[in-house]
Picture (cartoon, rainbow, N blue to C red):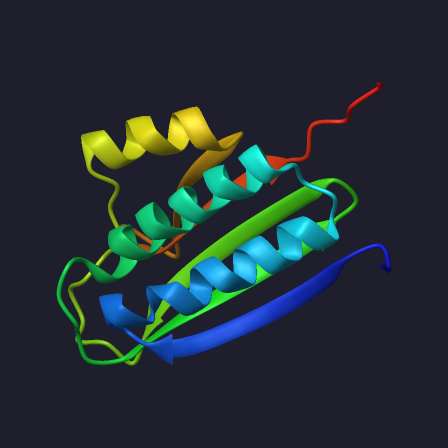
Amino acid sequence: MSADEVVRLTMPASPEYVRLARITVAGLASRLGFSWDEIEDLRLAIDELCFAIVGSEAVPGSLSLRYRMSGEVLEVGGTLDDAPTGRSPTFSDWSGRILTALVDDHGTDSDGPVPTGAWFRKTRLVRTD
């Protein structure tokens, strides 16, 4: 793997497509050497990320995810493209707690007063056994 690699995934902004995001995060995390438990954490984290961006119902537009791999770090960011204005990604209190338990850091991005995307970052635990 080179210093930084980026994988992009764009799909309809509908909860039934989140399975593709889960498969992608699991495959990339496996490639980086994350443990089985860490991969399961990432599968749950991607659900929360997609829910923060899309919600529980399909919306017009596309969900675009960017997976950046760098060393032992996997960072995933997402945006809702071509969607009606006024939508902004938000983590519910419950989602925020889940993500705090599963990943190293998470948040929303903003180009101004309204968040435009959401992201999380997880570093692979280095085992010395």
